[in-house]
Image 1 (spheres, rainbow, N blue to C red):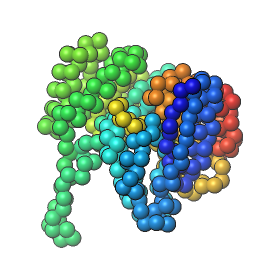
Image 2: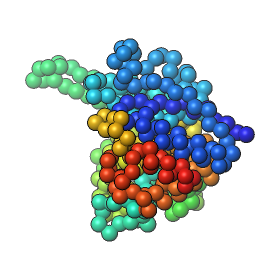
Image 3: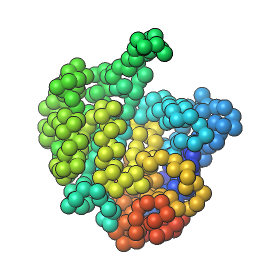
Image 4: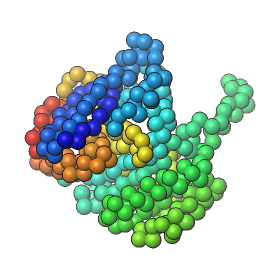
Length: 352
């Protein structure tokens, strides 16, 4: 029997609660489809930091490389200043494990309320491939004359051709594998960011013409992309973009698919270990109440299985979630689902 070693980071707030339900569903899928999951828990997060003063041990990245994937709940603690845990755990793991792709499906499930008038599941089903290790997030820059009226702050968006090429290659291959409209759209700002997105655009068309002639190529400015994500989401198949624009448009996409309670994402290193997580935060005010929606974590678990090659099990999880959203839940909001967190996990696991 095939087995996978999974590092589990429950994290903060409601993170451990949603991960628990995700694990329940993952185990149901493993039992049905004939593979085994060996789970190892790690206590990285706010409680550990407050107890020990250590955000992430220096040995953590090396330890994580021994696993086939990482399954994460949420990072963010009300008693820890914002940024400490997010930079010290999430960004550090992404960078040290070279998880250079952030993969964000934007898919409206049946029964889920969409804020876009007249749009249903048949209109909202696309994927954003966000470059995950470059751009403004590298920390290149600095501050001079801090605290004076003449203070200068510089933070530079930095990309090299290698980073751009490997992200584009993943996006083209993903579009081909997805095999829907076979259209890859580059989202940029070539009219203003004339150096940065000129590099992206040249690389995009060179690679497409040379190696992916079967994939249709389109280009959209980021502001137009935001408009069309609201007005005509059915136009999209796969969008590829840089780190900063990707950060913004994926959250816009999440709202159109019903909010953070259903949105899942993967931080992917195709040649190494990848990390999967629900997009919503730790929601500390709901901690321990058994009312938080676990479906984003469940969907993240499905993404993890798909990336590991267990595509039939991943499809079964998605189908089960769709059945639950269509026929069971009153709402995706915490405390308004008509079921507890545990019961929602049970409903999905039963259907798997």
